[in-house]
Amino acid sequence: MSNHRVIYSHAKTGIYPPQGYQFAINSTVTSKMDVETLQHFDVRDVIKLNVKSLEFFGYFCPDFTTTFKKVIYYTYALLFVGSMFVLFMVSEIINMVVVFGDIEKMTEASFLLLTHLVQALKLYVFVVHNSRVRRLINSLNREEFKPKNQQQYNLLMEDVQMSRILTKIFLIMCVATCVLWGVFPLLDKDGGEETTELPLSGWFPFDTQKSPIFECVYVYLTMGAMINGLANVSMDTFLSGIIMVISGQLKLLNNSFQNLKQKCTDTSLNHIEEGLIKNIVHHKNIIQFSENMTELFTTCIMGQFVVSVIIICITMFQMSLVSVISLQFLSMALYQGCMVLEIFLWCYYGNEVIIQSEKLTQSAYSCEWVGCSRNFGTNLLFFMARSQISLKLYAGGYFALSLETFMAIVKSSWSYFAVLNRVHSDQE
Image 1: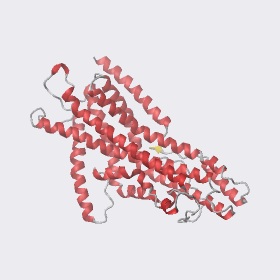
Image 2 (image 1 turned 60 degrees about the vertical axis):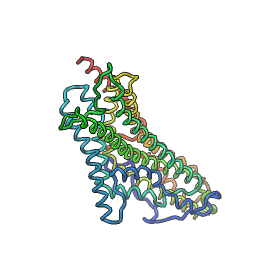
Image 3 (image 1 turned 30 degrees about the vertical axis):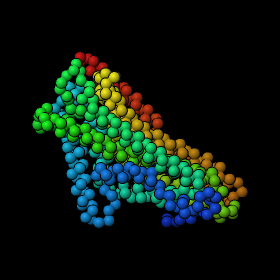
Image 4 (image 1 turned 45 degrees about the vertical axis):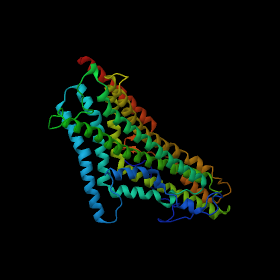
């Protein structure tokens, strides 16, 4: 198996039913919630807000049925993304070449440029692999991923609500950061200076100090940073939502094993063995979905991890150069918070995937197997043996999404900041 996939085997055993095998939800699974409500639960609601945002910003083409609508959308996306993102990033790249050699100006020019470079990588996946991403999203609504009882329904609803809350918090932080970037040059003036600087660095083929060019560039930089930031946040929270789904499905599977006998209409061996097979199919679907997600986004996550080490370092350096009571410091602190929260969410929910997958063996053992048939015990033993290998999501095939990886990124950023600060002090 290639090293960019989740660590787990798809080795076939006799306990898997034929492909396409379906199970109906038993009408006695819950006394408080009808079967229809459970069957109509849409797991895609976890990332619904993120998908709508990406479609609005031109990053992800909706599932149109007519060619005309697709042409209109791609025309809109080309003009909007081209003017607000591509030109913005080109200006940053040229500016980096112009100021190369000056540490302060290079750090000022690079902290947002690096974010946009890895954002371009994410955009590439959503545009070029649009159909694959769409299939991944639609596969969330498969029968195996739906709740089987009220407790599982509540667990999924918690994920939906948490995903929406995190997305909204992230979006608000992004808007607040960009607003402060647009405001601080107007208010933070040293010594009562009359001139006002641009909120962000960039290169333009004309004199930006002349009016009304200055005002136009000022608005473009502020609005461009905000729009690009909101689109980037939508992609980041989309990924955290997908990882949250994997973690949530493992929670549901643990619950299914713990209540295996309770979900059956009676304690007959046929019903219990059918429930076991259903859980095994669910487990297989979780692994398959995890692999599909990893194949699509492993490079993006790896790129974000590498760039985040540099961005966190550079942002700390920029914060050390300004007054702690200035709006510029506050804006940089918010930006730093966005960068840290971004990778923390991926690592936190990736860590939850590991924890929940490690619980499967114990959950399977606690399914009241005593008194069941020999065949049931054999199948259960096979599953327990396989589940002892924890499910892990990898970035680039090397770094597991875990809290340990998150701490390694933060520690590395601090070490590089200390080196950069020392070099800057020696130059003064």
